[in-house]
Amino acid sequence: MTKSLFRNSLAMLGMVSTVAWATDSPASLMAHYAATAGVPVSALSATRGETLYRTEHPGRNGPMVSCASCHTANPKQAGRTRVGKQIEPLAPAANPQRFTDAAKVEKWFRRNCTDVLQRECSAQEKGDFIAWLNQTK
Amino acid sequence: MNYLLRGIGVVTAVGMISLLSFSLPSPSGEARGDGGSDTLPKLTHKNWQQECASCHIAYAPAFLPKASWRRVMGGLDQHFGENASLDPVTQADILRFLEANAADAGTSRMGNRVMRDIGPKDAPLRVTETRWFVRKHDEVSRAVWSRKAVGSAANCAACHRQAEQGVFDEDTVNIPK
Image (cartoon, rainbow over all chains, first blue to last red; front, side, top):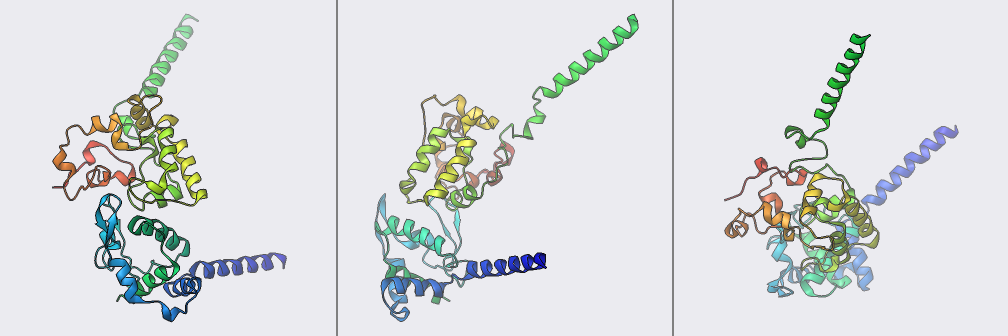
């Protein structure tokens, strides 16, 4: 009895953690960033997101840089890091793994916004960015 | 009696010789185990493989001494012109692993060879700055490094086709045109 109870609770714990693991999605992250920015999800703009992706900024090392410098002009394509390693596509349509792990998403926004814009991105910008990539078919 | 003693002597001598020959490094035996020749010990460490290999191959800890790894891991927010910052827990975990297997940790023959050319106080930031790396690549011309398929000297796997498995032996090298 105790044993089966234990096993059941273990199984339930497993289910709960699987669910928790899978809760992040482009939609949930958009909702999260919209809430942080204090705006409704409907106020996120795919157009602004695309502009953020394509706009070039003076790079720290000289040449102009944008998100597209490494991720290419088409986010459904694989990109390349500066040392030549392949980057899997950013658009969820081409790579369903994208925007399914909030910690990973935050890590890369923190790093790459600092590299491209020389500052962190705002919650609104992050939401716009995902809104654009998520509707790229 | 005399024969018995002589017998023991012969057996001991044969035993000693075979023991010696097994413990001496033989050229053919170097490619296995801890990775003699240019093969590195097989290492697994989740954070090292996951984090370091997101932008480049996970460079082997044996390529640089501990002091170098401390410098690299202490400056991840400006990592060769890019922000590669990590949360403090992951950063400390990776540094521990790098130190435990560094060139001067005495855990690999590759590390011993790298250390032969590094001064006791030197802490190069780049693998390509070590005299060991420079000597190993002295026949590669500048034009080869700048080929599009190579990109930079940091892209080991462009020519060392099994670099991600820690294999750098010369017969696995294939320089792209």
